[in-house]
Length: 186
Image (cartoon, rainbow, N blue to C red; front, side, top):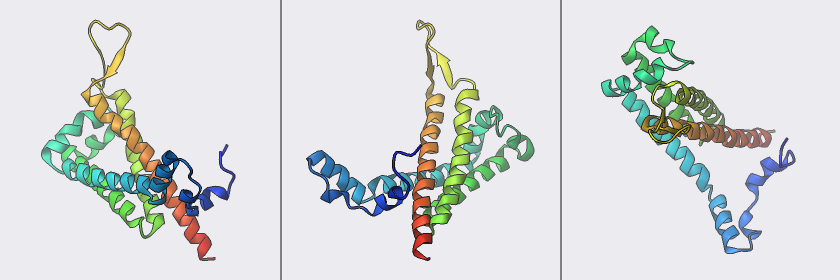
């Protein structure tokens, strides 16, 4: 069920909200919206993270660091058995680079951004599942009964849950752009 009637969601992007804002708080929100700051920060942040993380995975420490994560994953446990940790980690790093490059290309060709967002969504869905399956990600603290916490490893993995949401947002954003482009070419 959509909160916005169909058609309005696509046209809302063209609407200048600053003329409708009355209070300083809504004027600030409109200013942020009108300049597309949420998209810029999330897309640039995602690109930088994917390029940087992908590069690190192509180093020996990067490959060795993800062995326990991949080995305990219910979705890609087979990856290192098939390719070994170094080539397997290189493949993961290259996949992150491809997603980043497609997201960058999405600024000009929105459909490329959709594909990049889908690749990132698949990656972050996979790594988000590791939060549950990696030993030591969730721990008990002595003296606190019946309470479990995320360890540093768990918190490290939890950022992938947020990145999953960003990936879905990018698919949505580039999808709107692609739809508008398709409708203009008619």
